[in-house]
Length: 106
Image 1 (cartoon, helix red, strand yellow):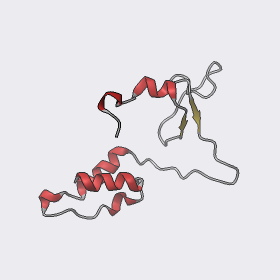
Image 2 (cartoon, helix red, strand yellow):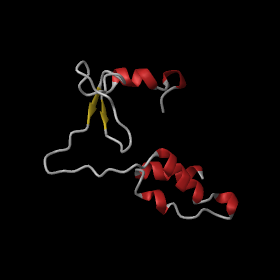
Image 3 (cartoon, one colour):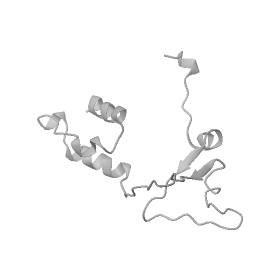
Image 4 (tube, helix red, strand yellow):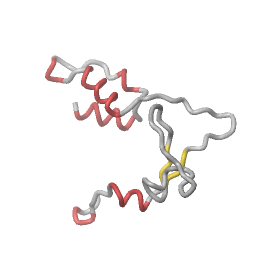
């Protein structure tokens, strides 16, 4: 890995300044737009844009949140409860690398 003096965590405002973000609509949440900010996203940062689906493609909407993923993991139990139950309830909700991390941390 990198030497410790070269490691740092980039969060918050710096991420918004340095990277482009694609924003996906979420059921139950609206973003107010205006003539000055037609997308409504400028209030959150300078480099955000709405996801534009290619012609013929449709976005599958859900109200899944990280809170729901954590609740499903909690319900699956942990090693202290006599062994882990299946994490199948989150397998298709998180990328394989994230699932692997969750399994290592249990």
